[in-house]
Length: 141
Figure (spheres, rainbow, N blue to C red):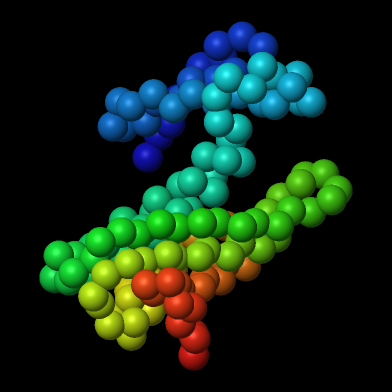
């Protein structure tokens, strides 16, 4: 896969990949940017949520009619020193619907361990939690 990023002035870049959709990035003001777009690190964590979310919906395809909503919140920790890389990320899956928790947990685990290219590419430790219909589901290994 190839991505081309073109400088837009200041700290802003516009990247385009094989799909042709532009992705605009900018730095926050404290890094000399204008804050007019998502930062690259925001895009990275968004990519993590999107990647595993797509995997989970693919695995749960036969059961999607029983799911009302899926929201994924990523809480990540970073190093204090440069580079301020992510060291850990916890994904909270907030799912509402009439679906068995075991099926959802299996899909999340498969997505994270086997299919999600983004989580496999990160050096950070990636963990997950599940809220199903407003109640946290215990994750057992």
